[in-house]
Amino acid sequence: FSFGMIAIIVVFQPELRHALESMGKSKISNLNFFNFTGEHMDEEALMKDCIAKVVDGVSELSKHDVGALIVFERETKLGEIIATGTIVNADPSKEIIGNIFFHNAPMHDGATIIRGGRIYASGCFLPLSENYDISNMLGTRHRAALGISENSDAVAVVVSEETGIISMAVNGQLTRELDPVSLKRKLEELLINEKPDPKKVKAEEGKKADE
Image 1 (spheres, rainbow, N blue to C red):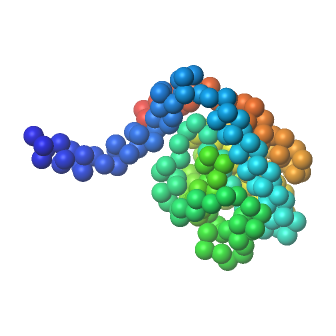
Image 2: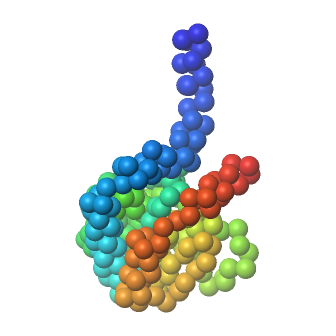
Image 3: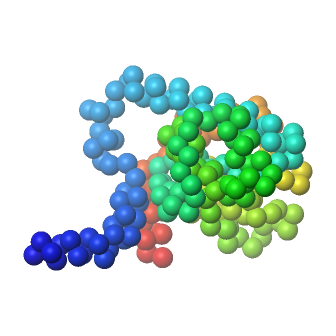
């Protein structure tokens, strides 16, 4: 019996990992009993600082027409996406973002994932959008940003390598020509002020599982 249980775990390891990733935050962690005000404020301060540094980094890249794709993970866990890249797990800064997306850098063409206010992974591959109405003027980065926003509740920030224009994708919609002030405001609204609806996230995950 013990051998059989171990065999099942080994054989179905990818499926079990996917199931655990899809669960997101556990119900226990969402109980008010564990939701201390101090911890909540610390998380907000951490994310606010992260947003400010990401905006600084993106703004600098925009000035020099350096392409970039940064994804903020929210309730939907991006474990499978992270597995395609390289774990960084570093505090965000303008310098680190610049090094990641520097021309010809090893992780330049992939996406960087922000998890818990930290640069968690870089060089990640994202699913491309299946929306055929997307303008031909938009390149692979924009299609990838839309793709991840269609398949999860993540927020993706894109810098065009051709024009330096900053865009943001969320819920399958792309907002273009953002300046640093408007980008920071929108990110704070989505990542700090707005709380994703757990029922909506669960429904989306159920839909993906059915597919």
